[in-house]
Image (tube, rainbow, N blue to C red):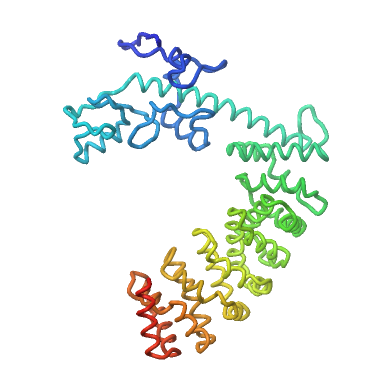
Length: 459
């Protein structure tokens, strides 16, 4: 059984070392851990420790936070635990809020409270502080070890290690980069150590016309892992030879390599000195569309759509090239299968492509444009409704006698009435009214009215 120890201020609490050793809290002492009594001496407050561990994804390390530390209301670890008369313990702020709302029952047992006093649970608070203090100490020690190892790897790759050696080459270089990539992916704070050791300039220099894809793959993965890229690094990465290598890897690499290449180009596009003509490459655009079509990798679909959307925004001449590789038809056909978060960027791209004659013609000629655009009216978001309505307006104006009846058959009339009656923006309602008039002009009155009624009845 756990022993007791006297506190300087009087009273007794569990001997925390014994409690942990006995497995009461599911966390035995490990060699090298600080004594539990040192928890009160930790300079970092308990909440700050929890927040830092949580931000690093290390809230419980290799073990779950003991259930007795969790507030039944918020399901988060407690910082200031208090006990009700029913014997149930809660975080003070959470139970105070519950009582302030007028509740006079225990949230867990639903027993009626005969006393609403909140008694501080000093014993549990000591245990929570000790457990998180240990976890925090181990986390800091591991972080320091990871930072040191990352710096050593960078110095080895640069040839600035002590004692001084030649920069790593061949398979040794690939192995070092792979380890550095793993560290950066597992521990976000390592990216700072990489930058401080000169790793950004090193990784940038590794990308070039004579770089092997094995080296390039690892270098790109580290560059997009969260490492801060300064202006000099971005300028260097925008050199044609480096962009060409990234595009080659986008077309020939594995799925994760393709995604990382797309993300790197996306980062560069946002740079002030970026040259738009850099993305005017059929090879790049084909690679991006291939990634978007690969539904096995949702992250790749998202990354590809974001890049294509950015290209349409920064380089208008590229829109015709995007249309020329069949992007309009492919995107229209993909719309019903896309995840919700992907629909809006896809519609943004199609709307941008409709600004060029080739794009408008491709939209009109695609048999799925009208039914898929009608489908996304008053769905997902107002922005999606706006883009879908713009596409329908484009094709119906181009060929009203052909497209307007097809749109009404697809249920457009009833959807337009919903837009007009909704709380959408006034200009959106105006556009819906104009499109409705256009459809009515190219559809017999009797059939038009009956189609509206039938569609609304079905919906």
